[in-house]
Image: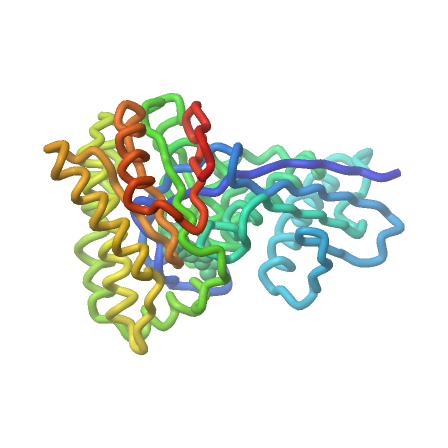
Length: 346
Ligand code: DP6
């Protein structure tokens, strides 16, 4: 008999950035990070996993194209870890079908550009692990399963939970305390909205994985960030979210994005993820805040030129008006319906 499960997972946008590993096989980070999980309306991965005794090997199709599972150590690690959890269940219950010994077929599909710095690996591995969890009927919580997603891609562990999520760096060598926990549910702050500005949907030039390792080994600014900046910022960001203090949330998000890109610039050779349009969007957000006389919008950029803006619902209309006036022909711009009201896609 065929066993099957389908699950979708959203992307998450870090407001305190993960950048740097202390263990690159287990994917253990040098610092804790904090993110906002977006809704699944615009950016998500949907994954179906099937297990059957007659499947002779594990196979995976990504947006309809078959990938070589054996060539990806991360994919193999994730599947092997999930199988171990299933095998433990089968040992405890002799009537459970031996799914852990069957081959798997995985079909994964995302509705946004892959590897353009839009967190495709995050939603991809989170969807895979959630689907395996459903298929194998694993009893583990989302936080416990976040350890499995982390082995696929660090930022993926945060997409296992909704709302505001902290990935605790942890201190253990085996990674058992390096997992994602919810800081607050999405419903805690319904006025907060995210706007995704797609500046470019091209594949990024330097992958996060390669870029962050060069940073760890060459940037003195990075060492300082990990030691003296992030611990304080994690605490302040958590408090701002709990208090729904937008000005503090927004200021910290902008400062942390800026420091992450400064660290990329301090990497040798330097890594430039933002482009001229990204910098123009940054200036526009500061001009908007100056014009309204308060911190009403924030930007953040990951390993690519695309911007994610955070804004409270009441200020969204004014911000979008300004953006459309200043960028009359954006490459593409889509609103993430993180909190209700999907609006026009330009
Ligand atoms: C800039 O999670 O893609 O988006 O763990 O090597 O797969 P690997 O890296 P990845 O890095 C994401 C970096 C970032 C910041 C963040 O999401 O926190």
